[in-house]
Length: 228
Image (cartoon, rainbow, N blue to C red; front, top):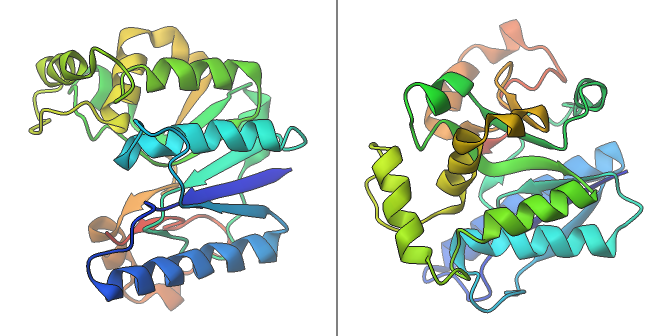
């Protein structure tokens, strides 16, 4: 069983069009889950008062795990991500076979050689509902705003990943840092690079030109296009 989890900040957008776009993006996810028989949960409440912005997702994901023990996988999808292939099916057999507990779009070379903070994309990920995952979320969150060393973590991230320009510790770079420091984590974390499990819209949109001539339904050609 799969539960898709998404959400947005508790406050309304400053521009009304923002809330309209959030609604349309959520409708996109609901339609996809309806087609494939997945449950979907939308959260707009801060489950931890100090875990705001991009860090707010981790308490939500962990709460979904506890609330749905029957679900084997929790699929986090950012509010501004849009599913562009409604026939796409998660290749769970591949991930199950290798015993991975976390699947995220990324490239090992960019992590270990180029040391880039964009070497993976944490706005969409698939995480197995198990104790390992809960423990990992705790370790991940400890680099966030709940940590007394939050400022220090931001400095550490920038010292390792030179292309990261902003000073704050963020969830994506924190995940990359954990993988960078402990290669053994790749035994449990699958870096999906064979298709666009999650892609930035600037890269995705050009692939749509003459798409009807080369369309392969259900293969994940642009499965998640970030429209932010």
